[in-house]
Image (cartoon, rainbow, N blue to C red; front, side, top):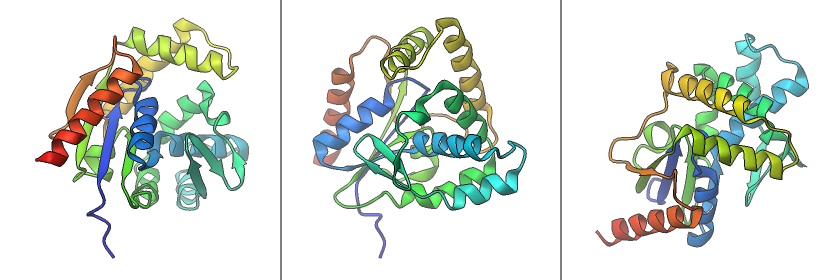
Length: 223
């Protein structure tokens, strides 16, 4: 049975633009399911590191993506029965995930897994191609941007809070490189979906962004 009638809110955007925090809170407010698509690529990267798979072994990477058994519990992601929520947030894992995400066959292998999260009563999905590729007919599409300085500050605070070391100059360099990879890759490049609401979060609090997204969704539902 088709699940296309189930509402979906997509929140795409640049790395560290706040989309994960916002998507989680919107999902919680609406009692919707939540999908952190970036966590799937980070989980792929963690798996690659643990299994010593070469980045140029596209066949092995694709097979790994096809059998990526994971599930979310709130903001936590479990690989089999292991909570890897903190492990996947290491900067080295994030950088590798960005490289893996440029491989078209890996992206294709993860499409069905991502779409399977669309369940009653609804879904909030965050990532980079949620509104353009995975859920092109979403009820509401949001695209978050922020200055690279603001994003580096956020990533720095996130890493320190989770017990990782961080150097601001390295974060700025990594974000610049990841932005370039995300926007220039041949498969599903990062861009705002047609009809998406664009929101600059540079000087906004998470609460303000969540309130704006909920207001947009409430307006759409009334139409």
